[in-house]
Image (cartoon, rainbow, N blue to C red):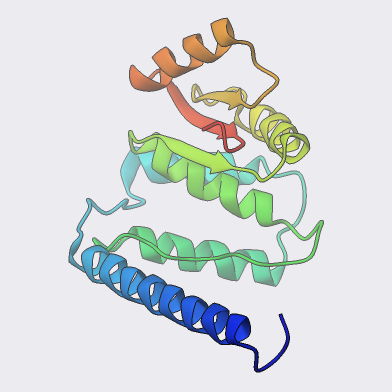
Length: 174
């Protein structure tokens, strides 16, 4: 559109109206979340021992940033408020390990974990990493993407619904 044209003005007003609606929706969602409560995940007893054993199996030395992110997540888990946390970093700097440790705590505490990846390739990479890292823990990891057929997807869905699968990695198909 040409700047200053009627079509430009209408488009600008529509975008402004849509942004305001989105902002109000975000405020409402945040207000509802601030009222939500959940049982805290406390690293005590058997869960602490299992977590320490899982962490010790990490084949690399943690970076200072990884340790900081993990500590902050574990502190968030100790609260009743649902966690809002984003972990950012360059490729190859250990974000997946941070996610795995968080997933371990939640899954070992009896809940299910969903790892959402934007592409099938990344979902497969995460599935392979999680499967390898979680082998021997007794926590079942599954993959759900466009590569699974209907029969396999149905089986995975049943296992999720029944609680047998504790960690699911997938694309938007989740």
